[in-house]
Length: 309
Image 1 (cartoon, rainbow, N blue to C red):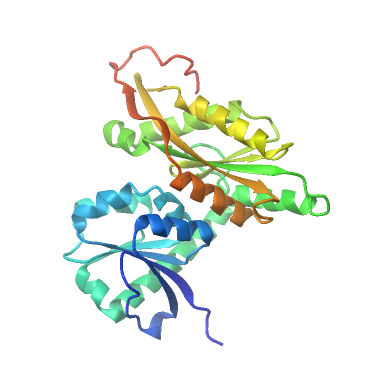
Image 2: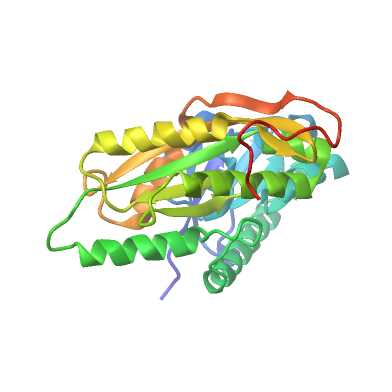
């Protein structure tokens, strides 16, 4: 019995010629990154193959709001339409979770492309398997996405006979990449930890805050009376994150976009609700102040109300 075909989302290109030696792929071409984000919101794909005109377009992919969602669920492979990847392109995209970079010659060779896609999917499956045994995001101390999904599934099972409304929020944070480039990775991680503390302090003990990506948080509101309660909490959390943070004596700001899904109105399984909320956050407009709010000297007084550890 043959293995089921892998779902391949092709961005900015037609369905590529592939050979079956490394397994079957079912390609779904789409023209733009915005269109790809909508497909990612609708369903999971095993692999996302993104065509870039040249290495100089790597920054546009790095700034794609849905990239963090794509690398969580899929093996993301980048293929150049002309030329070969350079070290700066690898340094920009690989830390963001991109699985492989292909030259134009490699992408044009059906056998090579098929092998690289299949191996990227296999590596992603092993990575996801390893993540299931590690249920905490080490940089924030928060539950990770796997643990959040498990918790949601458990709650849904308990409420199957009498479903009670719950809300899931996805908060996508912008500005971390700029802070990391200017102040370093540890400063960006400190900012993530401080953002996590603010979120946790603004919620009830019964609510759950989780890290669902390098630049995203998930918040499960386990008990709500109506959808308005979820919207009210979302506004409260956004306001908390809009205040400047003090990092190494400097005030920095971030932007926030929030997606929203309701149980059972928008779905009865955890993956569907999370995909909807994350997709909305990726497509929504970011609010707040990204990067540096004001730049002070090292050792300056912390930002007002910034008392996180």
